[in-house]
Image (cartoon, rainbow, N blue to C red; front, side):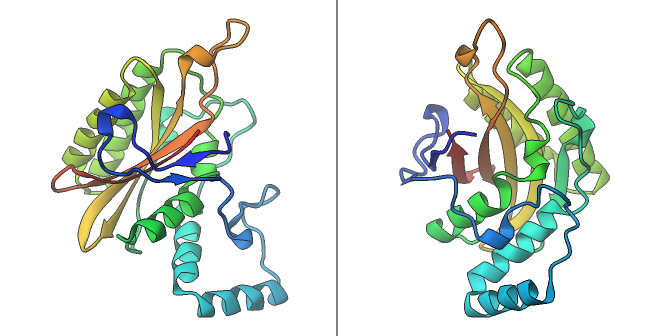
Length: 229
């Protein structure tokens, strides 16, 4: 994954945010995914340290709880294996997303970047990305219906995201998370992406980058965005 994170929108969605963030590595140490075992047991001393940090910082408490909720029950896949569209994630998150921009960006970076929910799709490439987008969008929408969520608004914002890719980028929506911001329900959509022109030796590049879009469910207005690369 590239090391530059930006909250500046791509041209078709420009006009909402204009601030850059310098690095992808804005993470609390204890929020890093465990590469050996997702069910890692926290030691008593580690637990005490985490609790003290949470007590000092309400924002840290929010990030910790949210990261745990997002990463729960994520199936693992072998390296190079392509999870099917049915492996895309739809979840409801009870914790509200902050509306203040710095706090919102911190949550999006810490909770949705470099996580199993999105990293498991990095074996996909830009080849046939539009057909894959349609398959993943259908899977996400179907899961929203099954969970009795607003599938109509989800489908609509997925269409906006597809239009944003245009002919310049390859997008793959791999997660849709319902939460609230300022009392209104929002969709947080995680998207794997890459520039197809970045191919080497005739091989289609893999989707190693991630973008996160936040849309108001009622108005379909974009209310948050950040991207890696």
